[in-house]
Length: 120
Image (cartoon, rainbow, N blue to C red):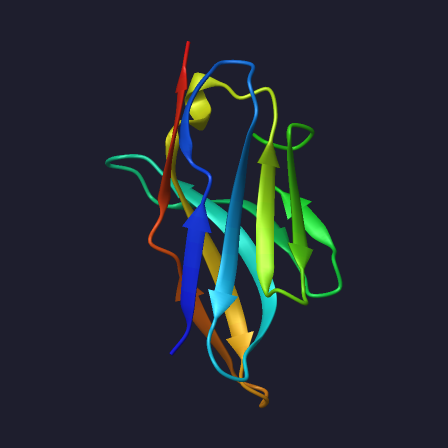
């Protein structure tokens, strides 16, 4: 069984920074694409940032230039460094990983979410 453990959420003021971390644990797993999503009450979960196994990132327009996604393949971990936070960034942030167990099929897993609150 694969578990994604997130950490780093909290309450900050607008303009401040926060770093989220997520690590995947389980037997014989290889996380391929890892990503961060966020969700606010009553809204659909939206993609924030994605990073491939070879380190290629992509970002939602709303966070490009402010957020940086990175990963450590040795630790099966992904991080999201968030700068210049805005109240609109307030959400529950979820870590996501598409995992291979040695074959071609990928399995998708989600973390439990971590709350990020940005006050104005």
